[in-house]
Image (cartoon, rainbow over all chains, first blue to last red):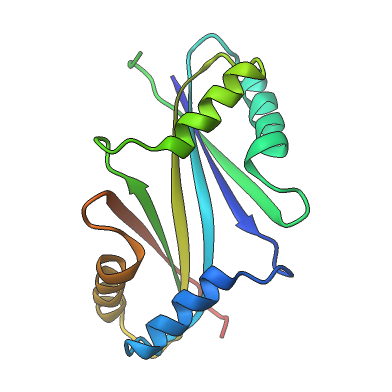
Amino acid sequence: MTVVKVFVNYKESILNPEAQAIQQALGRLGYENITQLKVGKTFELTFSDELTRAEIVQEVNEISDRMLANYNMENYTYEIIELEGMS
Amino acid sequence: MTVVKVFVNYKESILNPEAQAIQQALGRLGYENITQLKVGKTFELTFSDELTRAEIVQEVNEISDRMLANYNMENYTYEIIELEGMS
């Protein structure tokens, strides 16, 4: 079994009102030491054992490009975790 | 400078319609080998150097409990990354 965690974040140039709102609220609550706040999404995909690692990488790239990230506004990174002895 | 990444995920018992919709759409697109899909949020907090590590841990716990995670439906984990030589 292979678990792939895809992290999707806004590009640096894109304004993120949610992150701004949270950072302002934290300032009002007295948390003054936070200089930056970013908000992103995580998609955790579990693959069955039928695919090779190369096939999984290809599928993850396709899925991230087509569905999980908006190419114009977002970047993505991912990490691949192979779990042995589980089905 | 210290960066803390907080990962917020739905508890196992909570139905997540977004994850279900994405998994069904992936099935229709021919990605049949994904047995599970989870969707979560990431908050990346950058702390200035005024706080000790213990103070940062305390603030992150408070902030996660009060603002970032919904105690009834979500769990959170975080990782602390200390960056040296940057301001």
